[in-house]
Image 1 (cartoon, one colour):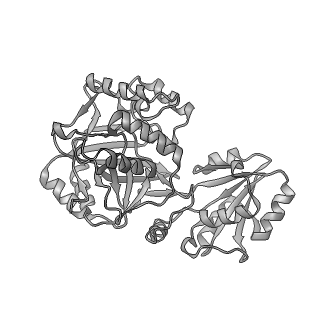
Image 2 (cartoon, helix red, strand yellow; image 1 turned 180 degrees about the vertical axis):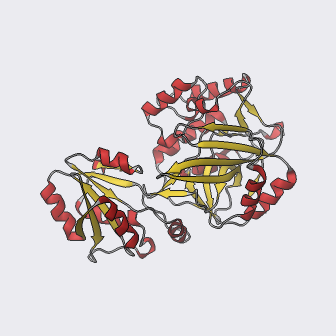
Length: 398
């Protein structure tokens, strides 16, 4: 059987030509809107958004630009098989965090070990499919989390984090990102051996993972190691934050809204600080409501049937209630940023505030091969696009 994880020759920006990496990296494609896209393009003509996203339907120009950057040595290939240690230092809610993981290639055919947690949609897959065909590359890593702590990952981090990184930058959110190249075979082997036969959760990148697997089936005789996909792999650690995604709903009548709400919830008006205290105290499903500058604590009544496999997942239980009296999904907005969500909640809107989903609960659910509702998790911080990519190597070039 093939190893679960292997090293590769990464492709990245040439530091001799690109002096400020903060101007060329960007977030994952699926959290960049059109306005953000053009803001990133203003930072540099070589911003990675140029080849990561397409808003005008002309996918050919992405491939042309990608090859142009390779010809100009804007992007260069590593000369050694390596894995890449990736560290992010960031602040959240006035607390400091560090998260680290490795960027390597993950064997996609271990579907018994690589477990998704979301459904995929046709349109995003078609978009990614058109791009991968133009560039013949994995442009950004799949975000993978092991079910168990990986001691070898911690050991290699302790060995390298004081060394000079391959590159270091502060991103658009003010987070420090550092990457180290690890090409010593002993170090690589010591890390990767620990990864074999581990269970992994796909945290982000479900569409890209499925598209990469489809591309492998179509082109497996053309490229080397195409059954492997570029991945960032981390494990349960304090710096792995799983944020809730709050729901903002639109309604026509406030009186009718509260009338329907009270069919399913016990509703208690509270101070904001007390809402989060009640969140911690509650052993069963609860959520918050923000409406007209007031906060409410909502506790579910026992008059709704739930799938036992998903019981305990707040996003699922809330969605099941909302289905009862809120039919128009187009009137729902989503945000993982609570302050942003509060600011978006006007007179004819109400905000449902959710607790952070527990990683242990997510693992428990997906091990049963049950997928979570859309917009259940927001893994934070996101992995930057443009740090390390992986070009497919033709078999005759090997």
